[in-house]
Image 1: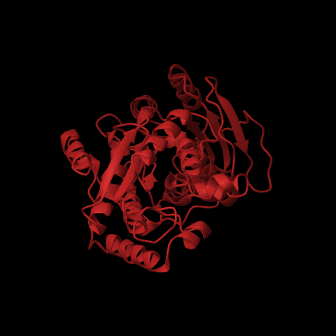
Image 2 (image 1 turned 45 degrees about the horizontal axis):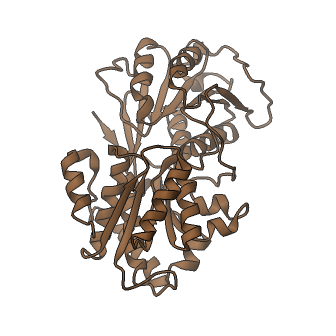
Image 3 (image 1 turned 30 degrees about the horizontal axis):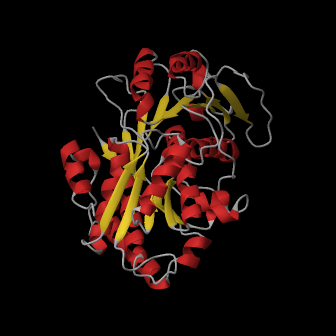
Length: 394
């Protein structure tokens, strides 16, 4: 399988929204290209231009099948922002279909859009990989983009699905460096006598453990003696359980917690506020999302490891439409492209001492240059990940 690194730009600012409930019925959101209006269900035929999207003045038509609901302040919202970028910057006609968490409805949604005249069908994450690949194989004349996974080319044999993945471990490594350095920052919220950090993940899976591996290696890079307490929510969406488990980590002595907690992230943010401890969030700039609507809730989020899903969707669809990216390839985006990184917002610059900021910037450049190679859970066995995790327990 061929992998490439491609360039992208930093994520656009995303509008804050409150966490939405997870319904079982699909909801649709459309966005008009600049200067135009579009109605839900408007499916002007463009199939004659599907193989050469630049061959017509008609706008691209792109649909996003969201396996969940918007309002998660994570993957789903970020992906939706990428759809809006396609509308704003390329004049595309876009639609987002919120499929909820009733997975029995997913196949029907995939079949529906595949039988319509969309130029590109977007979906993402490992939970829909098998279904999305099967549909792509069933509809070889349609075009598909799946993010946060690689495509099994033994299943999708006609070269009509692009895979976009991320070096999440690189951003997690910087999160570990930040958390470890903050132990010696002299901050009043941190007890310097306790060399303990925390990690709360949504699920004990390879894609979440990729964050864990990077985080632990970043901590070890600063100080191998630091201990780490780890928990998994066991769900992508259980906000109250995430709050409970993050609170337990703080009670066990964690001075900073890193939370790749998917849609349950607000539970971790709430726990940080109630415990008056620091949190490093994940996927989106959670501080930027919350600072206006709930500044007290946002105050203890010192940074977020970013996975700029929206920008990657925009970059990939644009690259495909211009012929610089191919549907028969997988692409991995990392620190060097800006697809992942740390949120260095006003709260970060306020709370993180300048010498630590400088150290993180220097470390980031070492990762980009290859002087530091960050491990990945995808190259490790379950036993190897457990050994690394258990070896750093208090």
